[in-house]
Image 1 (cartoon, rainbow, N blue to C red):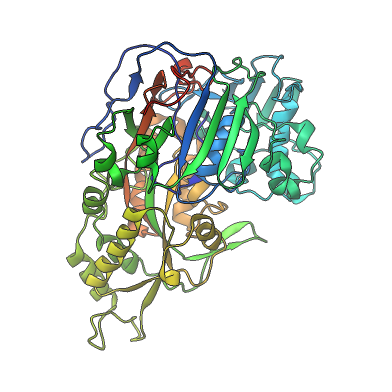
Image 2 (tube, rainbow, N blue to C red):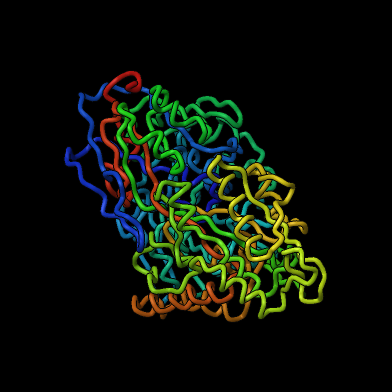
Length: 595
């Protein structure tokens, strides 16, 4: 499946790259990060044994929060739901190991940069939805119309959609169709853009990869999609390798092979996906209850010696961060609006908060070195544009103290805690989501580090907040939250417009400025099709985010996946165009997991 763009991250990592029967070569991964050790495990494994026919794969979704039950790509917002959605939905395009779109998969794409168009053509006229209905380009056009509809309840409608000719008129209701979507025939559409952007060439980039069964969703009002059985129930219709057979709300989903999948019926008969707590996943894997699980870095010492599984690892396309609430989402204007005088509006205060904590030490002590600090909001996973020389917020409590002193935040009453510039009490409400024991320790350590530089930072509600409730509060701009710790699964397109653009609903900090918008525009410009310019613009963005400190990254690192020894082949390599990485090809060598 194509990696989705910007997903809430409930754990260190949830989404996995699956693979199937292939080469018997075992290679060590070469994924490394600046300042990080070489990955501890291989990136590709082949287990002994002859594959059985069919079988049921048991897949652990490691998360401290339940499934929301939103199982279509157009509406899922966290990586827990998206893990399920990726099994029953299919992206229009495939990509190579450099994250670049390739003309395999469901559709091919070609660009006319001067003409400002992209032409998308289905690669076959014989595709079928999981219910047997024929697939046409109308289904792809319909997905655009759904996301662009004024009653759409998701968060995908952003600048990438507004860049399509006629989209904004359609969204406002002044046009009944999107003029920029020119249907050439039943299998081809030409998309007319206002501007072309290099992100169009990337997986999860500026060209939408979503496709919806029009024959199903056209019968449901757009405003009702999210709560409909077509999204949440087993009447879900998709193009993925599997379809929903049954579910236990919040807990598990049982999937069966889709006989109409465009690459053929999967080798597996079923996949059972269950939410498993990070606190119990090690014992569950040891007992042979599951075949595949993303393992919590904090528990490395307790799982590293398991004998019934093999571990594979890769660099994470995810990071943790701390963000500051600086404004609100203005629904009427459809954009983020800075507050006139936000509590966290002083950049010196924000930078001091960043310098006061030590993510590297936290990564070493709490996550066994599998997590570590990073110097940039563009993480090392994006090796083509990551700036290893970008100044970061390396632990420096003395610098934090000096920044606060110089900015006028001083301890007036001698209680060890700093007051505001006007002498009033400075109390900062900090929100964080519930994850695992290591995260609880990390959050408490943050509070101690901040107290050491004289900042009175209090955990909002007095405890961490369950994932879904946490994001509800953050997204709704709860006025009691001053700053928050969260995480993103980044997808494969690093373009910041979707997270930090003026019109981005995912811009939870609500920070927007003319300077920042100008850099984002350069990243999305025709000029950035020149690779050297693209690198230059991303360096500007990384420096800008550091200097303004409306958000700063805390930890990123290595994702370790446990694979039971009855799974024939598995790898963590990038590239959905690699047949070995297809869920359709995955095989088992026994009826039950090895114990």
